[in-house]
Length: 139
Image (spheres, rainbow, N blue to C red):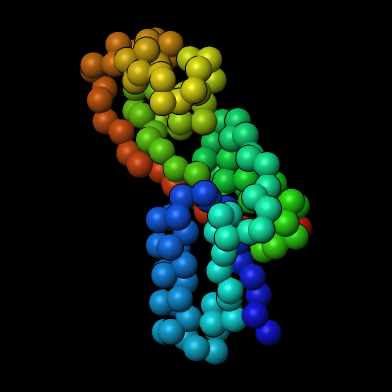
């Protein structure tokens, strides 16, 4: 029996990469759960569900909110992600919180402005690391 897995992204490249990785896992273990997957992206659905607002302060919060939202909208097993930079000058805070610091969309908010909002100067501590998390939900 095939199980449909929705990759909760409108980004066709991300859907394709995720699907390719899961298909590779199925090929490596043909008797595994992965071999029973039928993989779809949001754009593969007949009706694209309403967008999910990512307003949680952590990558985990946003990924789980998005997975839950699209699982509830579609009734499908859903895999969602959230990722971004964790900036040392911001005490390792993630992009989800940075958006709320500036009160504007993430892309319109500069790192220096964000650091200053948390009392840093944006120059002394310039290290950052990429962070990412996946979350799966079913209904």
